[in-house]
Each structure stands twice: as C-alpha cells, then as structure tokens.
Length: 195
Image 1 (cartoon, rainbow, N blue to C red):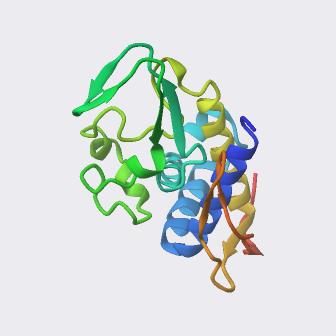
Image 2 (cartoon, rainbow, N blue to C red; image 1 turned 30 degrees about the horizontal axis):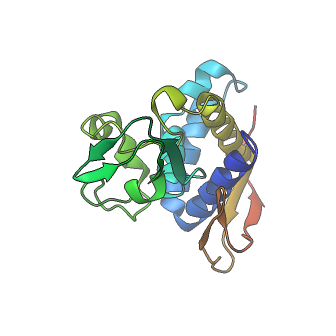
C-alpha cells in the first residue's frame, strides 16, 4: 500500500477537485506552463511549482489517504481531562482535525491558497499531519509529495480534465480513504508545447 494506493487515492481526489474548480486548475496550469515551458522536468524546477504543491497540500488536508493515525500509550496519561490507561490504543483522525473550524478558515472549502507560507506559519504543530508526525512520520512522505507533483505537472501539461456529469464524492473510510464510487472525468488534449 505504501507509496501506491495512498498516492493513487490522493491523485484521484486531486483530479476531481481540479475538475470541480477550473479556476484552481487554470492557475496551476499557468504555473506549470511558465516554469516548465522551456525545460524538461527535473528536481530544481519541480521545487518551483509552489502552487501545484499547495493544490496537493489542500487535497491532502481535505482527503488524507491515511485518514487515521494510531498510537499505543506506554504509560498512563491524561489529555484534556481524559484518563488514558497504559498500553491503550489511541486513534487520531487526520480527516477530522483537518476540518476543525477552530484551526481552519472555511474548513470544507477547497482553497489551495491557505497553504501560502504566511498563512500556515500560525497553525499549531499538528493541525496538518497527512503523513503522521513525530518519530513515526511516514518514511515515504517526501517521495509521495514529489511523485504527486510530477504526476500533476506532466499530466496537466498534456491534458485538461473536466466532469461531464457530477461524480458522487463520498469518501469510504477503509484502511485508506477511498472514494465509494468510481470517478469519471473527461480528458481533453491541450494544444500547448510540451518539453
């Protein structure tokens, strides 16, 4: 599952969100065209795709493939007035935390600009944790982010995706957060030069 199903699920949500928000897709495509118009894709210019990365971060905020993180207490503890016995399994829901109105302005809205540097500096440390956190942070987090950025950039250079009829966006919380129903999007070939 690691690096395959989770990334595929995240990209599925990203394409559906981009199809539903053409203004975001257009802004992302403009960035990709500007940054990649004269050069082949390489690590240095992938890092310049800041808005594309914000699209990924916002997708992972709304629909984190790893929608829960589990830990086991070593000793007894108390958190916010709740007693936790030793050796207790604890689940933290990234899906719920990423939608808390006390942490996120317009929590249910797809708004990549919320991940501009200045806006995220004031968030508490674990307000956003699509890959877990601490010493057990997902070992593949940077690879997954890079993989998603490359996929979005390369496909966006060549195609525009749109919804011909509304897809039912109902998450199915299994081991990963999948969509309950298949997604149908239409590909339209772009007429731009691709390096």
